[in-house]
Image (cartoon, rainbow, N blue to C red):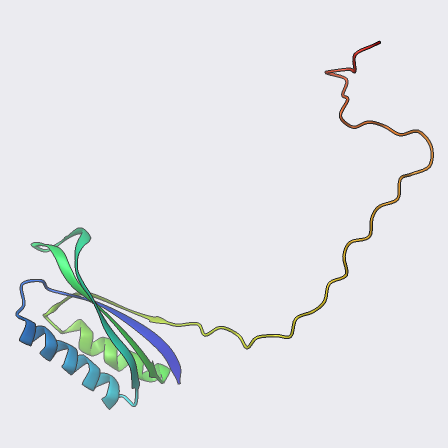
Length: 132
């Protein structure tokens, strides 16, 4: 199973009990599709970047869940026909790779000065050194 993140933007004019019923229906559909809920966190009401229909605000919710890839299509199909949602987005969460052992890096060796004439790189033709 893979881990997914579902961001929901719910209509702001809905009553709290209707919002909770919508979230329950979505979480039940995840469970019915052989998924497991990890976390549901409300982000609160926020201003939208642009107007959607007649709404300038939306209530945001983040749902973290584990599910097989085929189940996500079924979950999205149910989200598409839910009238209480303004927008939704399902993304796959990349889990960090297992920590690899530290590799010791040797400090860089100092470069040896070449034999012969030393050229001061601070002097250029555009600004020659002052003559004594």
